[in-house]
Amino acid sequence: MTEQAIVLTSPPGASALNAGAVDAFALGIGAVINWLAPHEAAHIVLRPDADVAETIADARDRFSGNPVDVNAITPVANLGLRRRLLVADMESTIIEQECLDELADYAGVRERIAGITERAMRGELDFEAALRERVGLLAGLDARILQEIYDERVTLMAGAATLIATMQANGATCALVSGGFSFYTERIAARLGFDTQQANTLDVADDKISGTVAAPILGREAKRAALERLAGEKLIDLAATLAVGDGANDLDMLAAAGLGVAFRAKPIVADKAAVSVVHGDLTALLYLQGYRREEFIL
Image (cartoon, rainbow, N blue to C red; front, side, top):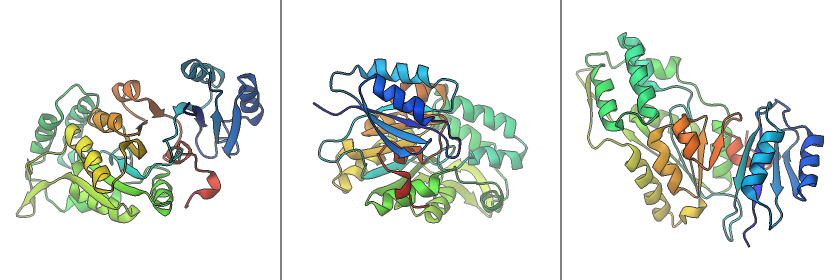
């Protein structure tokens, strides 16, 4: 029988997991507790006959009111919890911004474009059509602002550097796959040391943004295809893969991965994903794989 476990994670430094409360919870359900980081992350191995859904609901009720994420995790046969391939969305996942919204700010159409972005990420609009509409509003903008935005506005999501460095140090391949623009994925991938990156190409002519995107557009289906292609190239079983994202165009990728994590995601994504991180930062993805805090590459 496959070992079932739940993982409790909370934001670094929040001390949200009271050791006594967690120990009492584990004891009450006859489970074995393995602390991954004091007051921050705990891995609880359930009895073989445990009702996982009931246990998850009980844990969420027990720790409600605290910034604690509760998720069920199943080890991969012969591999354990650790994944060999990570495919990550970029915007609002590896970085804190939506770059197209930042470009729109320069063009004076931020509110209009941000509204379209939000609807697309909630799955209310076709991703490709929404992207073309938004990019069209940027036509004529000086291309130098692409670098200005990267230099002045783009910030890494907390835990991003540690997630990539730790997984790579343990032999995993890390890929950045975005529905955004390659101008930014190239820089973020180099900055964090991703093994590969893939995104859309924003057309530029005569140092001006043309208002178009080169075909084919990388969207929902392309993200899943990238995960499957990379797993095939690396001879990695899909069960041993990890995908993370926040928007509707990440749903297929999350569903295909052995461990698909909705990270601070839109409701449509959080509702459909089996694993969701709301409170913690990206280091929560390491705890979900059984890494201990002392193993992190900071």
